[in-house]
Length: 259
Ligand SMILES: [Zn+2]
Image 1: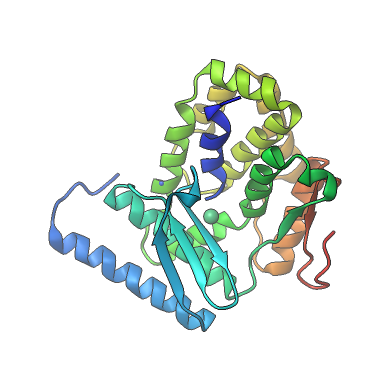
Image 2: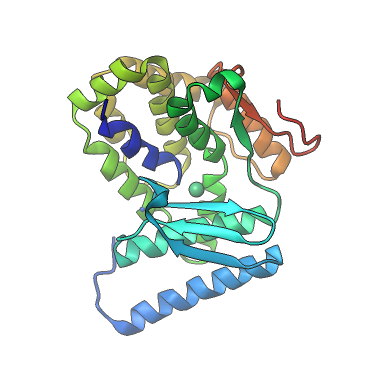
């Protein structure tokens, strides 16, 4: 069944006021600071950072792959200039974090693999939940505005009608509840300038989604991590709170084993 909701909500988790001046000087300044951010990341990593525009990001505006030979950043094509800049700054934040080992490796269990259509979006959301605020902080430290990207994700999500939300849950069941609840929880951890109820109202037609969101806040609080181990532990706690141990495995950065 074709359902637009999962993909659009996916945009929340993966991984955006505007200076509507057409000043060339302004555009050049923005590019310079992105260039120096990229150079910082390459120095820290000791390998090149390659940036490509590709529709392989799906509905995510950007994603970063920390590989051994290079770090690959993919950006959704067609983003307007300011949004493109802020999305790229967030992804360069991920690249810098890769150099410190702050990234998460998640994979589905055998049982989870059979449910890949619903598990893979959840993996993306859970894996980036506690790292996205750190990538935002790296961007903000360099003068970028990560809330621009978050606002765009929220704008896209709020376009869903109650009927679409209902169909999403009717089609994907508990995983749709998990996914939407986690997306709300993780969005609140990121810099934003809107009341969360503006977003959670979108899901009011399915009360279990907001119940999941509130339960995650109650159990987990709103913590942050600061290194590979603390990010792993928080991510694992999030997965366990969702009772997804039999579907999703997370790599322990110290032992190298998937748990
Ligand atoms: Zn991210």
